[in-house]
Length: 202
Image 1: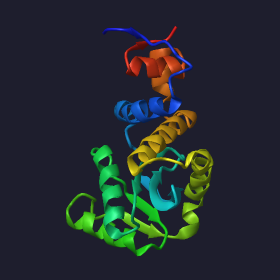
Image 2 (image 1 turned 135 degrees about the vertical axis):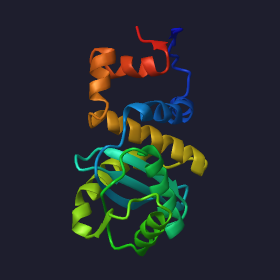
Image 3 (image 1 turned 180 degrees about the horizontal axis):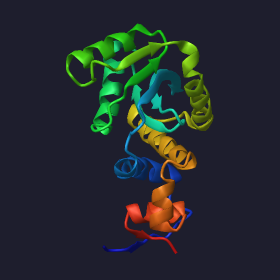
């Protein structure tokens, strides 16, 4: 393994670092964050960028761990299905037995379609009880506190890249990578991220 030394410069715009490294960090941590929970709590929340409303689809597990997320310009059955398909692609060996949503009809149609295609098992229960998703509503609020001060993104792509960075760092804070951080980096998140990028952290 080749190690590289990265020197920080005050002249390096943090915005460019986020846009470049956040998507890559999200990709690199996926292998060590398998989705093993049997109950998914799924919901979408609205976020505003440059005067345009968009919809951030998110899913968490029983323990509050972030499972997946997806930024969409629409709040439709197609968008709900795209998000659930994305999450299922990340959990190919651990299908959910329960998916909890609010009464948004789009989820009902998306889940029915995925069952018909064989991507969701027929025994997967769809619960549509709003109060069961209160934990996810609370999680939305904590994430949006991060997003709110930096809503002036130039495009949907730059907004999505930044959200990927926010989501992954919150996954670290939730302890979702704790076993890997402890075993591979002596408990140091910075060193662990450095290992993912083959970078030496002095």
